[in-house]
Length: 166
Image: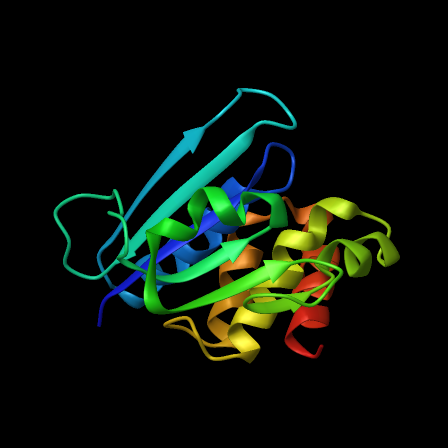
């Protein structure tokens, strides 16, 4: 089993936490995983791109046209990172309006939960619902429990489940 995944957003959206959750599931399943991230600006608002390679790979970087899955937390990054996607790759995008890829207003759902940063887990829930990733909801919930600070576990799980049942 091999998957190449990009997670794209801006600083403060939880790109790195989302990356850690996906990587944690791979570790829990005993699957080799490599991650890397690129920060456009080391502050809130700068572009952040994480790459995740699950399976037997030598390098964490994803070449143009090789990503199987793109999780975009910021729709404006689509033109910047779309070139990394395979022609038949799956794009899941946090967006209010229809367009390319599978879209969900993850930010709106997260704001409804009282914390806009939770949009990352709403989008992850959609990815699991669409069966695009190498793991299931139970495995994902376990990784969230492992990684989230205790006081945030329940709201993180609630956001994930909102995307899962959207």
